[in-house]
Image (cartoon, rainbow, N blue to C red):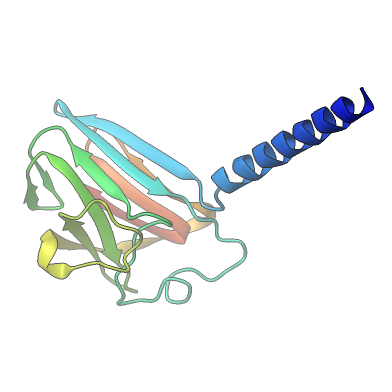
Length: 171
């Protein structure tokens, strides 16, 4: 009887520990987020991971100017269109794409890339770009702690983090 109780207790303890490790492994420092909008009947879905500022200098430091950025954290940010659209002036067929950016002090480059299934920008391949366009950043009066992408039904997409906001349109 004592042996069965010891085995049962040990088994329960192992199951509890495994569950705790599994739950902790699933929690990310940069949680997954989704921004959705419907623009002229076109369902737009943007999936990204949202890193936090945590007292760091962001653009020009953590995310250097002039370097391709995954536009979030973890996997590459994706944009999915249910119908053909114009994104920042670039004609894009219905489908799912990676969304990269190149931050700059006075100008950002937004990149629509055909390879939606990649981790970060480590294997970014410019030859798979569907198109690129530029936009100007604006300075926010309040700090945005966690990177945010907001898409609205009027077709405006806003990327905000720290004191920087970048917008582009989908038509």
